[in-house]
Image (cartoon, rainbow, N blue to C red; front, top):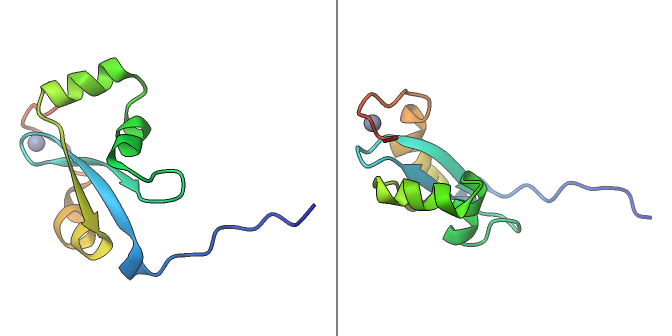
Length: 90
Ligand SMILES: [Zn+2]
């Protein structure tokens, strides 16, 4: 058996993320593109446990943006831990 190795670390410039955003614009979740998460559908599956939860989220206006890491850091990172006060979850 070969020793367990971590996947090679990607350069920041090649990292891409799906950002989950409430309808008010508050970001609340992130899925990084990887061998496990290759499409937006995979990203939805990573965030929500069931199709029903996913449908509910879409129904209340949750949307996704696919961005590079620099865009994430600039536009979303500062807001990721802010609590949404606009009722974005309902
Ligand atoms: Zn909000």
